[in-house]
Image 1 (cartoon, rainbow, N blue to C red):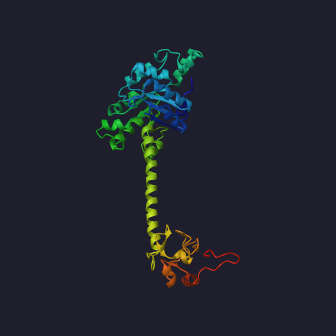
Image 2 (cartoon, one colour):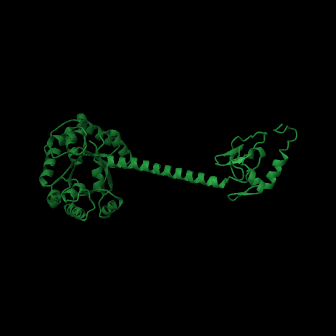
Image 3 (spheres, rainbow, N blue to C red):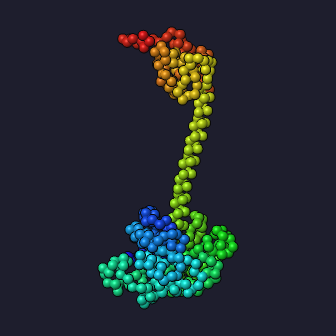
Length: 368
């Protein structure tokens, strides 16, 4: 029988973090465990998890060192017995509104001398590998009973409920509490918060640890400042959904920024690589990516000072290769013009165009 690490952390006053598990697949539980959570609450109240799958989820929690708790659908003896025989180390009781509900679960969940849980030598007992008498004592020691108080009626009877023996900790249920107060899902409503404060104060008086469901960083901080150390950080479905949606939204935003930047850059390039005299004339050469057509730029081998563009068809008729750094626009060269702030070497380019390319010593000129 494994020790209940969550129970040990609670006793030591060390913060513990858990999640409700609604996804009926052990891989989900393994991921939660490898993300360094301390416990899971496998949900059999709202989720469609079968008993066989419940055992697999418990096994996955054990594999990653987490404490597996199970929220049962109600205080029913057979279901409580089965989830404990699967290996659960705690029972979370939903919608507790009276002390008798807790007492019934205690009777069903604990072995003698505390309760009347039916004897079994299944997997929690390592199939009777060791003394079953010793196993019963360890099982009773490791078990956590967790009432969820999630209605105005439950809060009204908080002292009676929390004074019941063998309550491990109490878990608030602000969502259903908000509905019972006529403000469904408004878990931050002043009246909901007032009721939770009453529950917390009662837990302190009764010496029962209080657990909160962290719904925001500010809310989490508020309860931590009050001394709460058990935190349920929502459930696996919503956590996964927010992660999936958040990741997509991040990349959608990045794509939009990139597209907008490219559009702005393209527009700027068209201005920067200004089309001057005769740019669209027949026989023009298009500068790759610059978005401008220049007349005869490749033929003259001119260089647009500082413009890093490659001329489409770098070797123009006549065999002169355009300088890899850019192109000289004919009209701009002839006029010594400035393409949007970029000065062109006008006179030199014009002279070179008039004289033609000079052959290199020892080699034929590329033209001939």
